Image 1 (cartoon, rainbow, N blue to C red):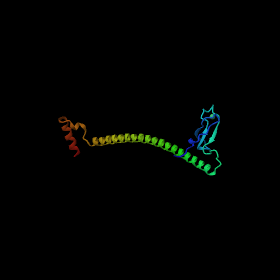
Image 2: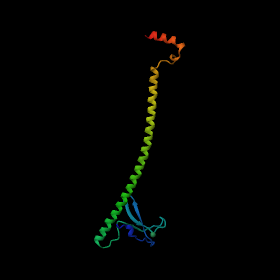
Image 3: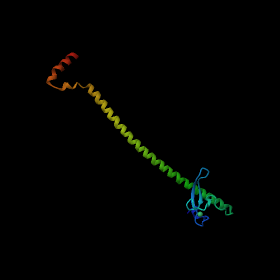
Image 4: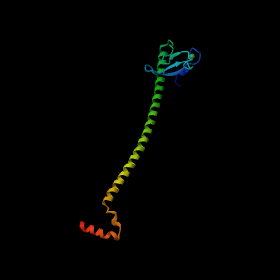
Length: 149
Ligand SMILES: [Zn+2]
């Protein structure tokens, strides 16, 4: 199992385990540090960058610690980014389903309008409605046909 900074829990000035936190400042984005675990107004002011572990005096061990902490920092960054991607994706999915339903609504409208237009065109081609009345109109119809021919 890989070592993590949790294995090395520094104590703050209160004598309790310091809490590992992530910096979100512009100068030190996504950098891990240890801080007093008490609330902001009662904490002792203990502060230690997690990627600057106490120097052991052994060059290789110090280098290893720095690399290890950098790995952990990058792992956390990857996790953060994956979470962001997940959020972004669900936002897009939501937007997509909204647009899809609007599209199908618009298609329905278009189909209705096309149907209406077709009906209007067909009614233009159809004989006037009074042609359908039988006896009374037969005479008039004959007259119209005679004049048009
Ligand atoms: Zn403290």
